[in-house]
Image (cartoon, rainbow, N blue to C red; front, top):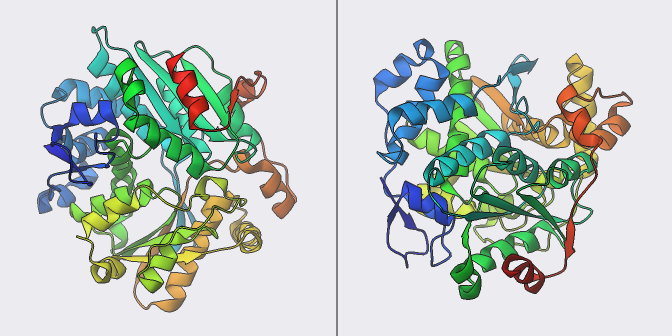
Length: 431
């Protein structure tokens, strides 16, 4: 399997090179030359496979012979060594909990998979790679944890000052060793732009080898398909049309789901549920893709006005908005609606969602109100509610117990370096 740039101005390359580069030399995102269609027998037998075996068959076509079978199985098993519970909220709506990993966020899957792939590629070599990543919240902690103390890998995380939760900040700023946090005076889109600019800077790239661990990297993005297959495996017996509502920021998660659908996974429809940073819902309504300045919200991981991965979604549908709209709906919600949804979910059965999951829940409700069918809806609960403790406590008037694995992190001292612009980033990288 080869990967080509969606800017169409770079040579195709193999998985290993795409992972190491992050972005193509022409600044385009890498995309697989073909999307593999899984045979019907795969879905007929899916309940009889182990999760590791199932995930191997899903990801193997995109890696080819770049990683041997035994090693790839080991990487997958270590990546998916925690649970993915499906919690019923109503008769036809459930939460898929993706926060049971070490940093309490869905991004543990992609970060752990990528870290193990990159560590394998640099093992027993003298290669030194700098992982440069922007975060709007959970990516930073997941990447920091996944790459912590991996030999030959340095990690530099850019995050927007004052726009991530206190717990998220602790997770990405307290590890030390090969992990450095840069606190940017700006918003997430500023962080993301700096990362993309660094990949194009000749001086930086002459001195150090850069890659990114954002979902722009194929090794972060593609393994996010796993939990859509895991969910289907658990829900297949219902014999209903599955609808997934994904709280969407940079659109890597929903893009992975749509890749899984393209591979044959029987998902009826996707919903991009956003906060007021609603570039994609607006695009689906008007046909005009017009990013606006980012607005801070309670669901900060979705405070993205120009989502990098939407170009991949457009490619999956060959830039045909009419075909895309048959498979994707988009809705946006305000902070006040989010708080109301948190209360509603809690009053139904005592379930404590986080602000992002609450937005996913609202997306399902709106879709069901506007469409007829025998649907079963799943919203992704992408982060543990403790990460948004203040918001959840104010909305629900309850205390949230801090998981044991997080308590030790909260006692550590923050270590970050303030920067204002790309020149500060460049100076740090080249020092």
